[in-house]
Amino acid sequence: MSKSIIQNKKQCIICNNRNVEEHHIFFGTANRKLSEKYGLKVYLCFEHHRGTRGVHGKDGKNLDTYLKQLAQTKFEEKESQEKFRQIFGMNYL
Image: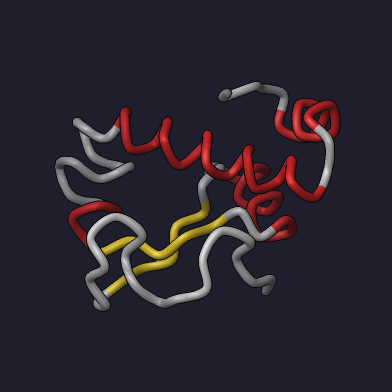
């Protein structure tokens, strides 16, 4: 299991709550493995992870997009934009 390249503290990246779950920013079978490999994961409290306003909730699209943009930015600090697009097939910035 790789460490997050986005945050070090085990608290919700949005509200700082310490009761958290690990969230792989690029989810789904193949993308979850890539998120794990490259450390593209964060900690989220239940509400920001699976709640109505959470990334997996019905009103979570803006939060999901924000986290994908943050992940791409952090990835590109170490690698290139071209490599990000090659691996994830998208550009979120």
